[in-house]
Image 1 (cartoon, rainbow, N blue to C red):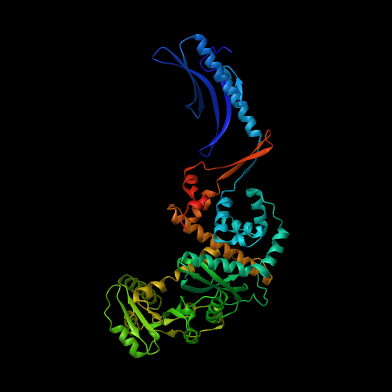
Image 2: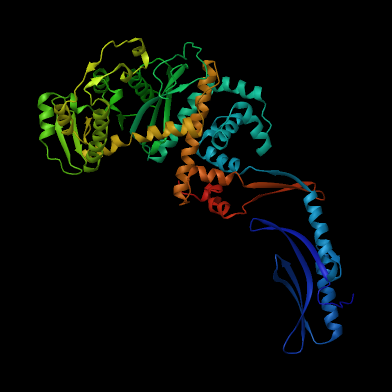
Length: 538
């Protein structure tokens, strides 16, 4: 065959490389050398870039050059993609081949979050729970929280997963009956692994979860609501988390349960179920600690850090507290006869804030009661006060003595512990209680744990368990983002993953499919390391 043009033998290929699918042409090229000879090479062109693939030598005679060109053309045809076209026809053929490729696309899945969270779910160990429905429910809860019906639609639309709604409800019954304990076990094991097989500090707090109904039963009852929902029934959720707010375990209690009675039974149960030693310290807010709870902690041999009500201390202890020098970040310890230590700290920054808030409040009082009398319109009408009637005004006076007394306690904070930790570590440990509040905020807000629309005990428990596992996955993703030094929040990573797609192309000649996950934008490339956790530090 005689080659009359520089580029005549064209090969057409679809190539997947560098996370892009693009069109590639291959042709024979003649290159004139300074020596007077002509080299014959096969060259590819893709995305405007040329690359030499194979050289077939050089010749100075026309017959030799034609022979080399024929060899090169035969080599291209050996791949089965060769088409003999004039250079001017290439554009039309490119469009034709593109249409052919697109017609063979079998599916496009917007499944970036599924691919990402599947790995994290498995790495934690939740794949030990032998039900794919749980995996789907947890991943959907992290990426697109909603009702169970909305979850079914989401799984089908984005992941091409067919999950029947009735199967979900039946699985929730199974989760409650047989698999909840394993979920707790996996969570504790993973957290201990992160902390060198130790638990360290355990933070405990409670919150409430409300229902969009006033109906009550053994579990759902009205009570003091953390969400300000006074008319709805609720349940009480007690949560144990480690440092760094990794969830350990939880317990659901009757909605009318006094929160102060929840802590000791849950900690006892937690220690026994997971055969823990005495290598942890319980940290709890003063609101949960009455005298009985402190006594029970002591009798059980637990180490603890709790908030102190320093204004309620004995006269001698209060005198000692107020006698300490108020210098910024100062810490003082007072040893009790029972072995406890009262740690007191002072902060200039907080003192200024306390003084500012008090001054604002007093200014409002002076303005409201400048006449020295309180009228019935100024009485709080909430609760049972609505039944009160005031026939005459009541005389009131702002006590300057009480104001002066309150000033003495500006930013003096107290902590009680029976540990040997130094004062700074005790204070830092107690201030770590914010991690429980964060866990509640993410679980109730981001993961939409509440309001709940299940009305049987087993499904309420199963719903909370799903949210608990979802929060564990959320936290592990947060840790891996930090390990890989990706400067994005968990929510922004999930948002970016939601736009990562996987194409599934039908290969008619091979009778199989080709799939490719596409990382196309800068954000996609930024979070790509999270999709290969084998290269991440543990």
